[in-house]
Amino acid sequence: MTNRRYIIGGNWKMFKTPAEAASAAKALKVKLINVENVDVVVCPPAVDIVPVVEMLKESTVRVSGQNMHWEDDGAFTGEISAGMLKDAGCDYVVLGHSERRHVFGETNTEVNKKVLKALARGLKPIFCVGEKLEEREAGKTESVVGAQVREGLAGVSVESADDLVIAYEPVWAIGTGVTATPEHAEDVHRYIRELLADVFSPGLASRLRIQYGGSVKPSNAESLLSRENIDGALVGGASLDPDSFTEIVKAAENLST
Ligand code: 13P
Image (spheres, rainbow, N blue to C red):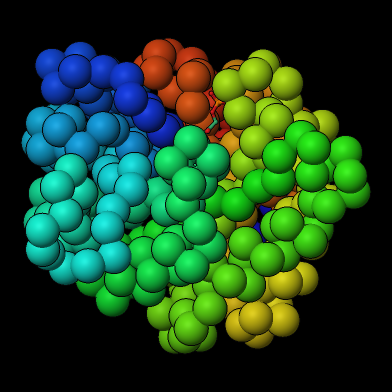
């Protein structure tokens, strides 16, 4: 990493009841109290957001939604809007996570509508991209990720793009225990930064942060985060335990001082 500030996210996916989430947030508030120079974001399930926000008052840890609809409101049973997330106390929202794309069939076009709405409503998108194993094996990583970036960010203005965070999460590395090598991750991150330079501008691309996600844990965090184009991590399984998540945040802090 160069002069960008690390951003470490904990994606809790569909884990933790409201009481369990509040207890994890309480633990993180204490453990991370003296952490400096790192942005820390937790992404709890929707019903946990309010108790987690409440628990993290007077903490620097920020809260993110895991998904949202692109409409402001309407007859969309089971959905949640940008305005609801914002009013509940979220600063960020994860969009286009591979589980949304591949389990629930979200398309680049839908993710794009969500990105545009989140930015319009003052939420910072954590915009996820990544290739599947068969795409990687067929040598299609760059074309798949390229289409996700270009189509997912279509119509985003240079002025609003400063609020974006990108997460590169190769699908074959998520929840599998298989981590992309730092070399593979760095190569794709560099490619994404070149794309961002083309889509927006070289100056903006150099400022935007690109997180790596996929089996990040305390034992591999430093080797990933020390790469030039890896500006943070989006952590799934290892974020559920406040101790291991704190270790990953501290690895970022150590590298930034
Ligand atoms: P794991 O860290 O469990 O592989 O999950 C990564 C992820 O999907 C984070 O969004």
